[in-house]
Length: 393
Image 1 (cartoon, one colour):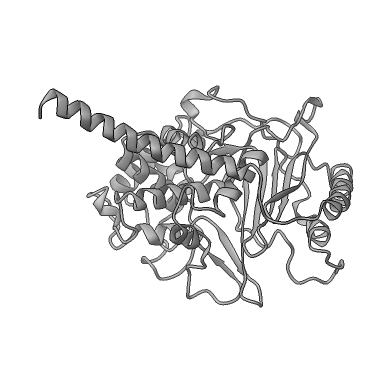
Image 2: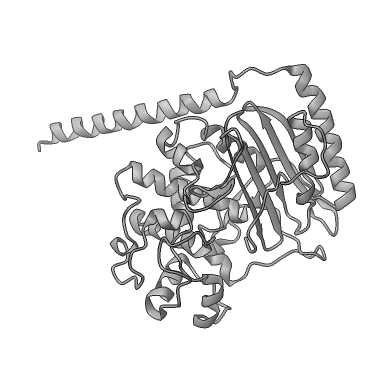
């Protein structure tokens, strides 16, 4: 190729990239103000009621954290209660403060996998051996990992047998432990649903394998930054000061310290603010980042053998209402943080609650839903808004 042709080719390439980025930039700007209808008077009344609800929760249960609630994709309420340093009541929280998301992180790992799928770099039907030929467990596909159907043992347990518990473990370390030591599986692949943190660490390791980048670098450069999520990161235990965040607190209000398990990402380890998660919620109502088919698969109940309304999609728990509408939600708990993200796909409503205190009144959110949906309080209600959450994180 001559120099002239080469220069023309490069110019065309950057022109295509520039058009794509401009299109994304324009779409992101449109997210700033939803064109969906809303009633300012209704919002004002609900806003005051929600403020009073959380003020009461703050004083009654010691709720410490940040809240963002949207209705029909419009901000209904945003607020912060308490402090970064709870015990000494230092540094008042704001809605841009960053919290560990715990298991709410899983949705981002799932989105990264689907993003790579759309780029043709993987298929959900791919077995793990495609990326790790020496992986000792046969028949486990990426789809099974996303749906918690891989049957792998819990790395938070078996890692205690294979490392000194002083040196942080990485995603690749977890994979190498499985390859070298072959810890027992819980069941054969695709036999049943069993909530698996190991599966999501493995998915994050595969993202690293495909991209040639550390998980935190990939997520920041390929997802968070391009989407305008400027307060969202993946924790890197080797660079603890890479971004500012609100520390977690235990039952005695002591600040928690990171441990060796905090080096593994994908199942946990995403840090974000309620304001950024509100952007993410809006993005999932559009085709800015993922195609509609991919977004639908995130929220679609994927475990067909599960009976009842509770199920799991790709990185999201699901709850199917009697009318067939799917609710997406996920709770999280890890190392002094508690988190909750609720999405009503039909009405485009969202509830986002992040706390840096282990006990934060999350089981008392039904009154909040009563306000948002003009619902009458019911002490005998069968399911709470927090739904159910597996032990662990």
